Length: 319
Image 1: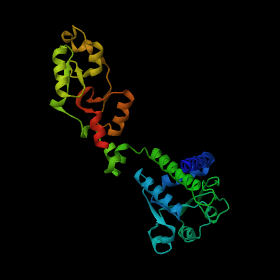
Image 2 (image 1 turned 90 degrees about the vertical axis):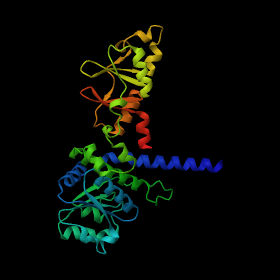
Image 3 (image 1 turned 30 degrees about the vertical axis):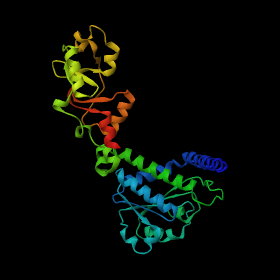
Image 4 (image 1 turned 60 degrees about the vertical axis):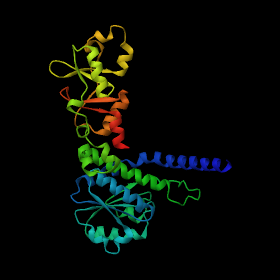
């Protein structure tokens, strides 16, 4: 138990130190940050992210995030750049170099290369007096943090700050480009993320599986349909085949009495139900159903039912 207390105390101390450093990033989002984002936004080539050590790992992640959100990018390790990888950097590209100290010797060849061929260089560093910052086209500076490491040596707070700056660049670019979920889906076809990005039209139950009743249909008949279809609800349609209401298991429990089976569906239904578009994504549908606290969702086109999904369909897909 003594060890547990020490471990939890250490974890909380690390979290506190890193959060303190992250809060200091507000001052980083200034005019230079805007210039860097605009430069990347207008670049014709790719964004070449580079770094050494822990910054290399952060750079690789930033590069992947940029690419997956519509800004083509690739990572080049600064050490490998000196052994031939510089040849992959083109004049129309932009280099994004990450270094807390800005004095990493392995970056010198990349800095010289960008100077020689007039390639734009953006730096992310905490050292305004560093070689990297002074030789950058645009320098993004963050306040030098106290590392969470008790020796103030192991890159912890500084790497967290660098990664967040990279994420902020990527998301700002995503929003500037108006990057849509359909484009995101095309770049993430596999894994749970790909499943979350499926359209409801790809998984919905259709045609004879739909639980549907007419406005003047008696509940004795509607209840049989509702039981047979097993969605825990039934959609009520008007003469134009538009859904104007839904009857759920909850409605049955609340309104059940001796005259219930003779009543019309229009008397029991809940009006103006939550409906979905066929292009809604699975992830969006799960969020909507959780928010509305419903277990089934009708997919419609101008209120005409095309299909239905149950929350279990969505959860099975993403599990």
